[in-house]
Amino acid sequence: MASLSLSDVTRLLAEPSAQARAEVAGKLAQDIDNPALSANEIRLAQDIIRILANDIEATVRQTISQSLRCSARLPQDAALRLANDIETVALPILADSGLLSAADLVAIVRSGSSVKQEAIAGRRDLSEDVSEALITDAHVAAVTALMRNSTAQISENGLGKAIERFSGDDTVTESMARREKLPITIAERLVALVADHVKNYLVGHHELSPDIATDIVLQTRDVTTITLSYGSHEDELQLLVEEMRRGDRLTPFLVLRALCLGDMEFFEAAMAALANVPVANARRLIHDAGSNGLKSLFEKTGLPARLLPAIRVAVDVVAGVKFDGGEHDLERYRARVITRILTQFERFGDEDLDYLLEKLTAVLAVGSTHT
Image (cartoon, rainbow, N blue to C red; front, side):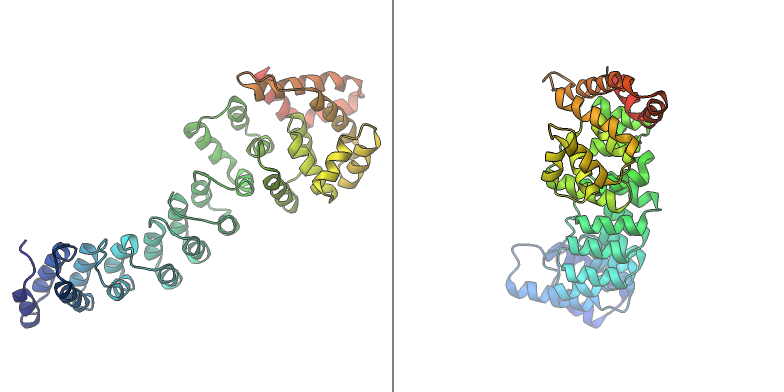
């Protein structure tokens, strides 16, 4: 196609057929990003673009939008005009133009159609503000597209809002679960919501250690939660257990299971949250050389009294079992902890033993796989 010339401008003004204007738009798309253009030529081309962006014929506006979707020389006011146009005109600009500000995009999310929202959700490098606007105001298809957009920045607060708004929608929650990285508090909430979907994805797409894979196969939500938390920073862990406590998910047997899997850090944080004391204080009471520290902390937690003997045994066992430093160390460590706890359970009465073993079924199944 030949370059845009003065005769093209004359033709545009003298013979304003839709076909002629579309041809001019095509030439502009080829020429406007040419680094050899002078400042006057750029201004002329941009003035013509402004005219075409307001053209009465949608096909002309669509040609401009499609052809100049990635152009840095598309006038910003023309880009905004096109972005607010009908869908067939707006979508290329909404998907790709770097000339729209976060505020522009948020405004279109709040007033635009679901199709426009979905186009915005797929943009590269979305800011947290735009992501949150989508989560708050967009339709499910757009929020799903946002969760699938690996370059989108989404705050923990935004992810939490998405769970609250779309907890019953598998497409949103599963897409969220498939994101490369999630805050631990969000991961725990997703385990509670979509464990079946998460399990299939984790097994098929990540290099899992055997204990995690077994947790998935066994569909043990509590154990999966513990696995997610393992190795987390103390501040992160406290946020997790506090979130679980508020949501009534910090159950007595999740606390016991964490301990029987050797996760003392989770157990300490959980006991602190349930007893409403600082973690440092809970840690001192748990590891008190006498028998009163753990008992006094336990009584503040509201946990069932019949669990105290098992917890006392498990605390002593975990304190005495060490990592050996070899391959699959974590799995063997957990198996040794569970085995020793079982040997100590012999001193309980039959009724209590049956009660405890029933509640520890998932832990025992996981441990036997790695013995």
